[in-house]
Image (tube, rainbow, N blue to C red; front, top):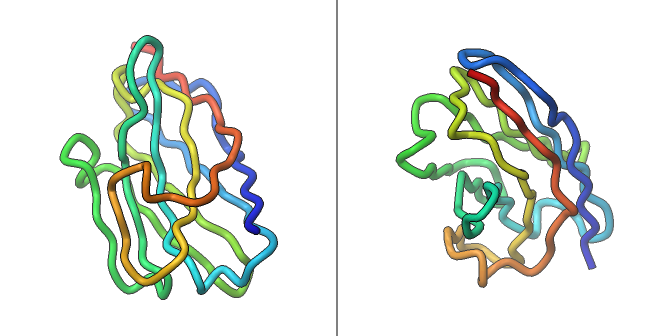
Length: 124
């Protein structure tokens, strides 16, 4: 079992930055890939970024590439999503997810554990 708790969301103006955190407990964090997803009002949940177990590889959705940075600290059982140059279209509930195993996936159905989400609102 892995329990995930997101924090760091809030209201920010367009062009601003936020750093989301994901605190993990349960299994050793080095045993799972960690992903971030988001769901905007009236839309389906979508992939944002993923980082492998070791932190050696990352992958981003085209919509956030160059603006968002995913990272993790396995010693602290923490994951992070640094969001720069935020746009109103980034407004959504952001979820942290864990996928057991080696492969980092962009399909949400491949993830085993989810946090409750944290709201990010970007004003224009």
